Image 1 (tube, rainbow, N blue to C red):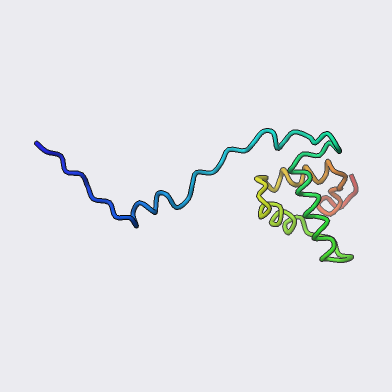
Image 2: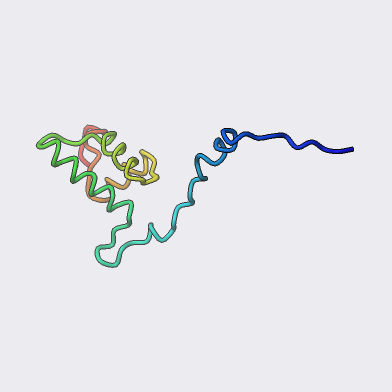
Length: 101
């Protein structure tokens, strides 16, 4: 008994090859830099915040806006992790809680 091999069109093959699997995060990127002690994630967050503050002028940059720009820059971070990072880098939670930390 002979087995028949199904024919696959090039269009069907391209569905599988269109997007490579996501790369695993590089643990070396989360090591602090010897120059200033910042990780890549912290550096990207601070850079995006700086750029947004230049655009927004005197107004505060909403955390949701910053989050969008950080994720667009290729950083895999949750909103909660971003908030914790901002507090750790010197921000306060006064807007969320109605009082200063």
